[in-house]
Figure 1 (cartoon, rainbow, N blue to C red):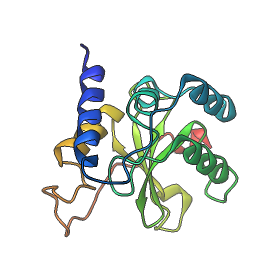
Figure 2: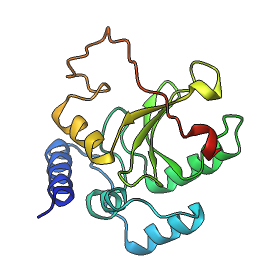
Figure 3: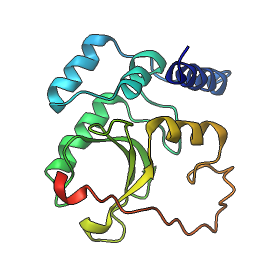
Figure 4: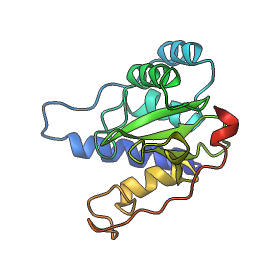
Length: 174
């Protein structure tokens, strides 16, 4: 079993254990046809790990803050943002609503499926993009083990002044 397979198993177990005893469990995984339709609308393929989350774990509803977006909602948000005044980059799919208008997004052109933070709160498009995690796998591990900045259990605590590196590819992708 490779690292991604182990990670998918850990995420699925975490989701199952979190949903025990709750009426509203996470949505069922998507079928291959639903994934293909979404990729057709987007005009690009999802990275393998992200596709596997949707087809093997569930169609969103799990993860940090407000959870991973259902794929249909992620596609709609991407389409909406691409026509907004924020110069949304090509092939950067919002995957999680972090609150306060912030999104965790996957760079679907990145070999590691790097996770970017979109934070429009500074008020300027050039300042809205930073690197949250070099990989989707690392981002998921941070959520699972509580070490990511967005986790309540994070050692950073409430007083953290988050200093993420700016995303240097922003201008070339808009």
